[in-house]
Length: 211
Image 1: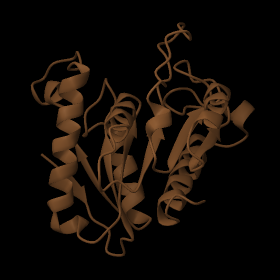
Image 2: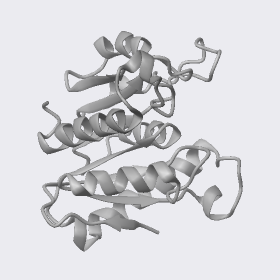
Image 3: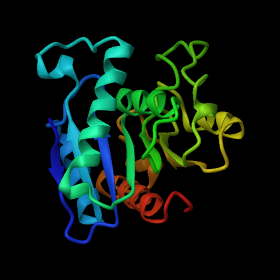
């Protein structure tokens, strides 16, 4: 079930879930896992059941949450994760389901990372997906683009005062939901944008969620 990207100098571990449209073998997931491992974080990725079965429509919320819980249990028992603080999170939907699991006060989680949190469906800002977030007690890092159609960085910033003091935001200037930017606006090439994201997430995890 798990694909593990081990770091020979790991100080923490991260279980990373994919978004709705791409599994653990997508370009983004493979790149992210490798980049975090290179920064001292052992990473595990996995596929949700619908992806394993070759379906395009995600499973219902309870199925996704139950699978996340099984993955957390499997990761906790994996030798590569031994004695390492475990963070969980993911891209878009994967991060949202991780947050719904964490809101149930699951033991063994050191913090959460959201790579483009889907605060609401595109064009429907009134359909918020944040009611459960105040129940999460662990540190959280939201990596959010300033023009993300699923919720901008400014929209996430408005949510932060209702969350625990460990909740943080890293804004990707001009970033969309996939963190794609325009050089003329962001002032840097896409590779540099992604490097900054990977650096910030690694800093958050290595610091124990305090950075």
